[in-house]
Amino acid sequence: MEQELIARAKSGNSNAFDELIKMHQEKVFRLAYRMLDNRDDALDVVQETFSRAYRSLKSFRGESSFKSWVTRIATNLCISRYRRKRIFIDIEEMLGLGKTPHWDMEIDADVHRKALSKAMTTLTSRERAVFVLRMEEELTIEQTAQMLKIAGGTVKALLHRANEKMKKELRKLLPNEEF
Image (cartoon, rainbow, N blue to C red):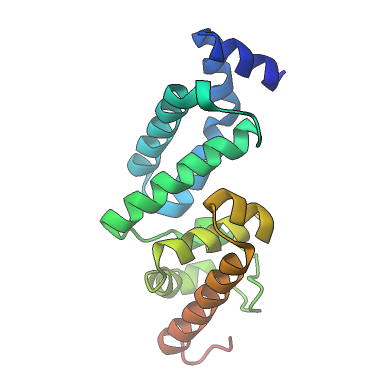
């Protein structure tokens, strides 16, 4: 069905493209909101993502899924916006209550939210993108690498640095906790 919608949209059928938007806009919004922690910014990214996708649709070759393609566009827009604004991410939303990052820290979102948000500010935009894509979107190393158009080893290095920076900052902010 999606391939048919893409073909129809490529031939100028705006209703088909509207259907593609309906299929993917919620996921794009969630990703943008988690990366930017601002509803208005996330909505702007969603709008710009689909605007760019529409303008570039004829060049979409289908080597990846439409979902991956628009997610990549949204991720790149979020990174650009984050670099410009240095917006804090909402850790409670990103990690969710009761989730445990792989560095074995139990998250009590109500108590640690500010510390976690502060720790996230130590990450570069690329570290943050890798962290969000791996932790929240649960993409594999390979999927994350494809999404960001970087090598798998770079994803691993960025994720390792992000985790180390987070732990270091959290140790300072929450000295009575174990990480």
